[in-house]
Image 1 (cartoon, helix red, strand yellow):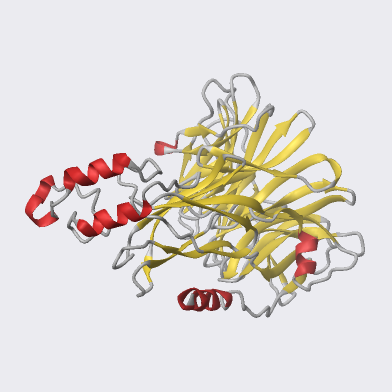
Image 2: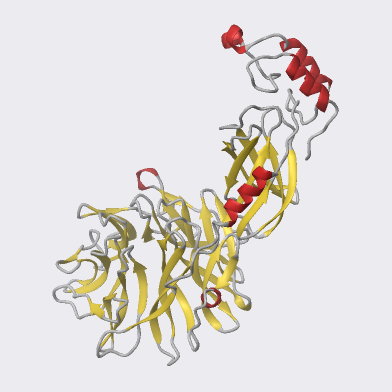
Length: 508
């Protein structure tokens, strides 16, 4: 009990994080223009890019939290209509689109110097765009017009590498985002049935179609996380679009905000893949949301309120990017309708929603040490497995007790959490999982030699067959499943353990 009290005291101190420097900052507009601005992307150094109004024309710009907004130059022959969609993590390489003498052209601004047009794919009407750039500024993605259609492309080493389209499709794809490591591009393409489908790139930049929600007829992918594992976008249902997050072969329905029609879009995801931003229709109109698996979909304005940030008169409508400002804070950029009714870019810094942590101490009687013992953990709800993993225990120096910690990242609710290790019976406890920490103390029962979750005559027979053997003498023929105290001998100590627990059943 002393051990457990000390552990609980140590865990309780984790959540004591000061809420400092939280903010909501309107980013304004360019001098001389009316207020009409939007922020699409954010670097780790605080460089924000998007567009703002300059004499009635949308113009690519860099926003500064100091209140100054700087227009980015157009290409030669252009007429100052442009947008900046992405920025590398140094804040010096910005991508987007601008007008040039040739038409609309994908553009790279190497701030504060060179402005470079990237041209277009061969043939077709001249029209290209760069949508996103990798963290190191070396690889970008975009879309261009080819003689046979309009295609997503990878831009690397000054070369545009067309990604083609989905199998049988009508020569159309659109590259919308690239992972932070520059490996994965996501977007939307058309199939032979003419319905759009979300895609991500796989080996050799082949387009991999992402799965649909049940009942959906089409989909689109708009953003991906740092390593391309998580992708967000929307599936188009009969009643309207639905925000989703893809994870490998799985898909999460992010839901929508209450009070409005059935419509939501996911537009941004943080590098870890845990936090998703977008917009949804509510009783107030279009509203920006923040989603994580534990808390579900929430109005971004409500999340700001919970952080002590109040923005009277504002209605936030779009999330362009989400980044980790520090280990305990997120920063978010986008746009909203300000108290004057104008669309204005914003920057917000909030406390990162608490991680769902399942900690505890597992007791494995009869062991001299629990160090590195693989503990099987399974989290179930209504009989369905929602999460499973195997984690090594950390010995606490008290012999039988081992510390474990996992991050299930499950919707808040009541679950059955089962624990198992080797020749110990399964132990199942009930837990209410939500944001923050849940601490459990499973005590496991020894003696299940055959791993059928009961200590019975079958286990006794196995022990008899192995009785008197030891690991050193047996060498590679060592079985050892009846070595219940794991001292490398099957002897009377193991027999006593089995007799003590004979007839016991494990939990389901």
